[in-house]
Length: 281
Image (tube, rainbow, N blue to C red):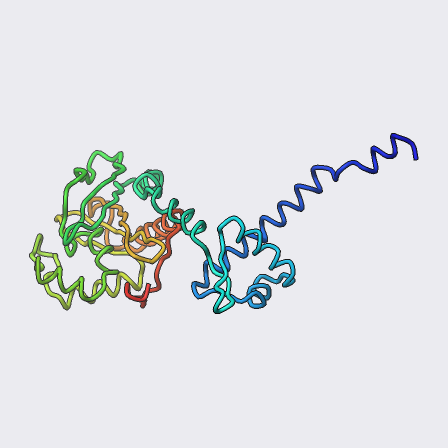
């Protein structure tokens, strides 16, 4: 064999083949981590291999590599594989870096462009909603909320969207501490009426404020949720009744609900089902 042929025969695989193999291993390893993350109690090797449709030998090889890097661990007593501390740290760093206000801003601007109305973002602080971000309507007559201002949970769209997902004991505590004072003649001021409205909010996925916070103003709002389906914040679209009549509330409510679900997904969160309580999330 000539020197040229020997060099060709001894040459390592081309970059395309090598990268393809590495990519496949990476994808398979991430698939294992994803499946283990969804099973807190851990999985035996055979169960995990079957779940990801890999040969047990391939699964074991990948697990050993992940174990060597601190991403998974094996429970010696039970013989199952689980997520290890390094994977937890990576996930936790994502949660710490998550900024739902900054993430929501382009979505608020998009809502204003789509509706022509002011879009807001607020959070719950005890028994009140606090407004943190806003995209103003270009209309001459528009709703403007000073950032940092507050509104009662029971008498605002953002507040009711947040309140709808509270556990019963927290709901009762807020009622005991703050009551249901009327802000306008339309404010829901009985526990029965408010509870029925919150159930409807959970069913529809959005809240409506029908001149309950300010006469002449309508608002629709929906909740953003974290990875436990716990309320993080709520977004809203608000405007004068002349431009947001009763007939337009459902259309805008669905738009805001779908936008809130987009933001929730971007944040790594989960939208709960209508019947899901916070304790179950």
